Every structure is written in structure tokens, then in C-alpha cells.
Amino acid sequence: MSSLSSFSQQSDKGFWKYGHLIFTGFYLLPLIINFASFTANQIIMSLAFYIAFILLYVKAINCKSVRVTKLFVAMLLICFCATFYTTGTPTLFGFVAYVAGYSYSSHQRIYAALAITFTVLLSAYIGDIGKVQYFLAVALILCATLFSYGIAAKRESLYKKREQESANQLEQLAAIAERERIARDLHDILGHSLSSIALKAELANKLNQGERYEQANNEIAQVADLARQLLSDVRNAVSDLKQLNLVSQIAQLKQRLIEQEFNVTFNVVLNTLPAKVEGLAGLIIKEAVTNLLRHSSTKNSEINIEQTAQQLLITVIDHAPCSTLNAGNGLNGIKERAEQLNGSASFTCGERFTLNVILPITAKDLQ
Image (cartoon, rainbow, N blue to C red; front, top):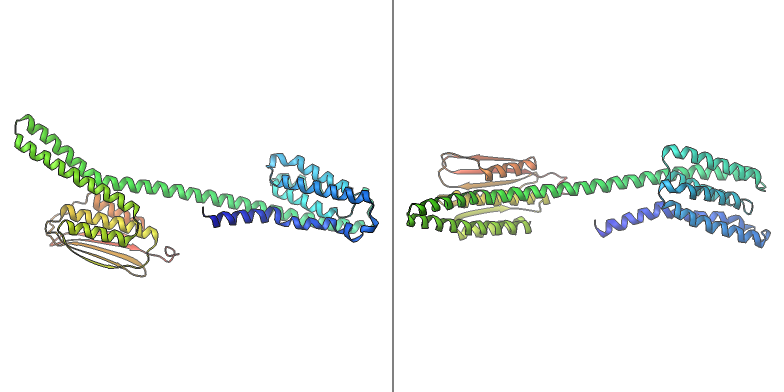
């Protein structure tokens, strides 16, 4: 998760839980307006109740629902007692309602709402309040409003939690898909070569037992060549995993073909590609080049890569006669990767071998 995302989440959390605490200052409004009419004892007790309430509120809002009831009752008791010293307690009652809306389940909220309403009415009845109708109106309106606000804050918190869980799940699925892709690549690279090495090693052993030493040595030499080629393929595969830039990969593959004395023509027209398209395209082109290295008899080939607004077109041509086409792991792997993007891969065989791959590019991919 990026630092910006973390900061955003922390800011949201602070806003939902603490941003509205500034409005508790309305509790002190009667004390400020009529300061001269309050005794020292009333002032001290009003401030003491206020500080105690804020501490309990902060603790309650960070408390698990199963433990919040004691704090909820304590806050109601503070509001009830503070009513005997100041008429600003409707504000605090509202914040108790917020805790109930935020912390409790739907069933528990009914009992919490009844408890708050009963305490408000009892405070108005017992307390020495001059205009009790205003006290009740303000208290009940604030309780209803902040109760609803608490429910909304809880829903927002649950939504973000589910969103984070979904993001984590997507990351896990992406990691699984990447492991499967790497496994498929290693299978494509190692499977054929290791099978050939095993067969040639067995043949060399039989030839050696038959005292056909010259042929056995020849097979052993071929095993060594296959092993060196396999090592080179593995190194190239690791290099490809580290380097996802398609242009760089194409340059490396072109150099690899030239080193193997291929007469190859590259026609590449590329702009910025979506990451998933670029990654799969790189793997497809790499596999196509590997097939050329293994099967081309004339070493005369052509690779065309063209990007349009809607799709990426990849064409690989081997200018060598092709009588039959046996789609092995390499060609099947190309087809599977194209289908991952709802694309297509087709092969034609005749006077020459042609591979055509179409990878769609949508507006969503480019965002």
C-alpha cells in the first residue's frame, strides 16, 4: 500500500471518529454565556464531568463492541449527573448516541436508543432546568442525528474493511497467477531440453556398455551442448522476469537471433502499453523466438509488432517449408497467454510458418 493511500485511510479514520469532537464545545456554551451566575463548585464540576466524558468517549470509540457497554453506561451517568450543574448536557447525550450507533449491532441499538431516551427524560424531570422543552428538543434532535451519524460511520468502516480484504485477495490471486505463469515458463524451457538430455544420457550409457565408445562420446558431447543451451535459456528467462519493458526485451531477442546467425527483420510500432498486455506480449514474443531458434531450418525470419488503438498485433514468420504442424508446449503456451486477455493466436503451415497473435487493448487497460 502506498504512503498516500495509508495517509488517506488514517485521515478518514480520524475524521469519522474524532473530527466531530469539536462540537462538544457546545456543552460549555451555557457556562460561557452565564459565567457570572455559576458558582465555583458548578464550574469545577462541569469541567470535571466534561473532561471525564471526553476520556470515556475516546476510549469507547476505540473499544470492541463486547466491551463498550460499561463505558456507554458510564457516559450516560456522567450526562445525568452533569445536568444538575449545567444545561449543556444535550450535546453530550448526542455523543453518547453516536457511540451507540457506531459500536452496537442493529439489535443492540434499539436497547441503547431506549436507554438514552430514558436518561434524557429522567434528567429533564429531576434536574433543575428552566425551559425543559428546549432542553428535551435539543437533546433528542442531537441524539437522533448523531445516532444516525454513528451508524453511517460504522458502515463506512465496514466498507473500507471489506475493500481492503478484497484488495488483499486480489493480490493473492495475482501472486498465484504469477507463480503459475513462472511454472509454465519453466516447464516450457526445461521440459523438452531435460527430456532430450535424459534420452541421450541413456543412449550414451547403452552405447558405452556395447563398447561403441565413439558414438557414446558423441552423445555425451551432445548432452553437454544441450546442458549449455538449457543454462542459457534459463538465464534468459530470469532476465525476462526482471525486465518487463517490451522494447528492451525485443532488443535482447533480436540480438540473440543475430548471435545465432539468423537473418531476421524486425518491424516494431509501439506506444505505451498496459502492464498486463506488455507482460504477456513479452512472453509470447520470447516463446516465438525460442521456437525459431529450435526449429527454423533456413534461419530466415520476420517479426512484425504493431499497436493500434484497439489491439496489439504480433506476426512471426519463418521463411522455411512447413509440411506438418505439431503444436507442442511452446505454441500451446502462446495460445493460452493470448486467451488470458481474450485474444487469439493462430498458426499456418505451408511454404512458410506463420504465427498471428491478436491481443485486445481496452480503454480500461489504459487507465
